[in-house]
Length: 124
Image 1 (cartoon, rainbow, N blue to C red):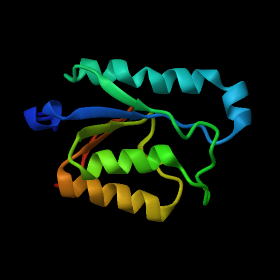
Image 2: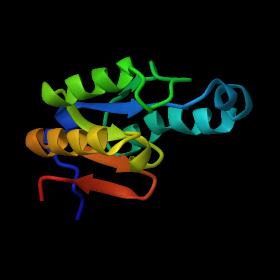
Image 3: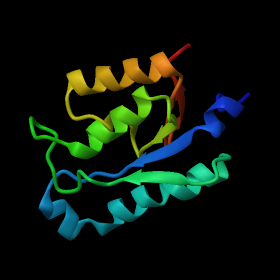
Image 4: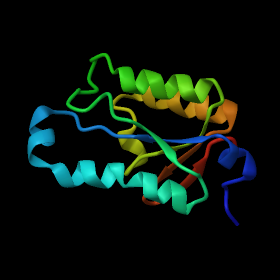
């Protein structure tokens, strides 16, 4: 049984791409390639396409302003996001406050979090 419903598929899929440092950007292009490839996974799971948010490339999550993360939260809160894709769900947020905010917002509006290991529905 899948957790992905027609309601999720009617909304947009979002792929959040991030690497914390400029060193990672310069020396780890494979991670970035794999993150962008999540758009293919979104299509395979039934979405027509995915919106990529990569505004936070090269920005550390530790206290720094992350416009991409804020944009992602806004899409979730507005009900526009049916699912958020990341290579690893724990990489979506870099501190407990951001992580819990993300989870609470996803639960409130019924957005899924999808990573390489599974599909997570925080409304259950």
